[in-house]
Image (cartoon, rainbow, N blue to C red):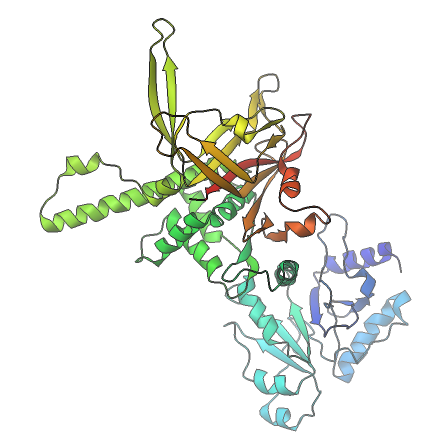
Amino acid sequence: MTVRNIASICNMVLQEQLHTVASFPPCGAPACLVLLMPHIPFICPGEWWSLSLGDRDILSKFADNRKLGGAANTPECCAALQKGFDRLERWTERKFSEGKCRVLHLGRSNHMDRHRLGIGLLESSCTGEDFGLLVDNKLSMSQQCAPVDEKADGVLGCIRKSIASRLREMILPLYSALVGPHQECCVQLWAPQDKRDMELLEQGTNASALEKDIGPEQFPINEHYFGLVNFGNTCYCNSVLQALYFCRPFRENVLSYKAQQKKKENLLTCLADLFHSIATQKKKVGVIPPKKFISRLRKENDLFDNYMQQDAHEFLNYLLNTIADILQEEKKQEKQNGKLKNGNMNEAEESNKQELTWVHEIFQGTLTNETRCLNCETVSSKDEDFLDLSVDVEQNTSITHCLRMRVKKLPMILALHLKRFKYMEQLHRYTKLSYRVVFPLELRLFNTSGDAVNLDRMYDLVAVVVHCGSGPNRGHYITIVKSHGFWLLFDDDIVEHIEKIFILQKIDAQAIEEFYGLTSDISKNSESGYILFYQSRE
């Protein structure tokens, strides 16, 4: 049986809108694949458990100790199953193995699609018999679940199409509840959500792999590493959110905001809900969909109200300024309410004041711009505040070389935006400057202004938003972050330990070098550092 034979069979079955049955066996069980049509079920050998069918997505993909399987526990079902095998010319020798599992869910429209047993049958049944269990629309198991779980070697469960939510945190407990410590579980996944369920279950496997990579002894207490679902070219948003989450002062203030009294929904409340959801997960690693935040973002700003790729720096700038505006407006309202109660209100005085918020305390710095008159050589200076600092980039240079400016006040967290996108007149479009720009793990900055608040500050690199591709409106964004002494890569819903990626390389500098940029060909695709986050040690 060749891959082409199997692919053609799978394509034929897929065109008939078949339903997939998944079985999760004990460790060491052989892998196989059963695809069930109403009357033509068949099994693919275990070595073909991952198939790419032309333009179609991979039909099914499960990690080690996963298999897809099916069986029947009545003579009629066995006969129908065997008849289906016999119809496939080269598969007649592959008889049904009753030892693997003996329960078959025959499909949504079949009268046998609910295998329920009365209490009498349960009590009189022998240990080791297989039963079918149904998960109802309320995300709960049938009342027969507990006694069946005590007796069954294999359990069939159906995760209904009409359940309230198919988020991983909702469906995973249902799948887990069907599996006892000594059992295998046969679960029917009904199209079109079957592929999504498989992906969500795989994420749990990937998550546990990340925990193994880091190691139980090294895994930080009370830390969570969760990927974010991409809702259609939202990597620009996911990458910035991951970087901000691992800027600890910012995270702590967002979580504190969540703990305050209930407020009207805005972009900050949605961000606080997202951060709180990550920080309070029972599991250490996994995936969370930032759907509420994305919906609010698209509602508030037309620039992001589409499924096109956007600029990560524009999003960062908008997010920080929006949060600052929200906090300032809330402070203003609180003061107005307090003064109204006391009968002491001066609207003119209050309207002229712009109070600093924790966003300013964390990210705001001050530049001093000097202007020299060409005639009289008089020098005038003007202070300019910033939340993120944009710097021009040149080929084969470093961040310290790019930061040739007079800084009067250094921020707690320095967000550096490398201006990698330049409008090319001859091309009539923006192109990417993939210049090699070295950004060190440690950065010492000196204030050059005479009346500087801080003489110098030592910074540590904590996160880098990386642009992958050749232009601002195409490509992809990922983020690398440093957490508790090791580096992680966040690529939407994927989270990886960088030390595993760069095997046999010295971590830190050598791993980060991959994202410096290129030494030649400015328009070539590259993975280049785009936004750098440095946190002060003070």
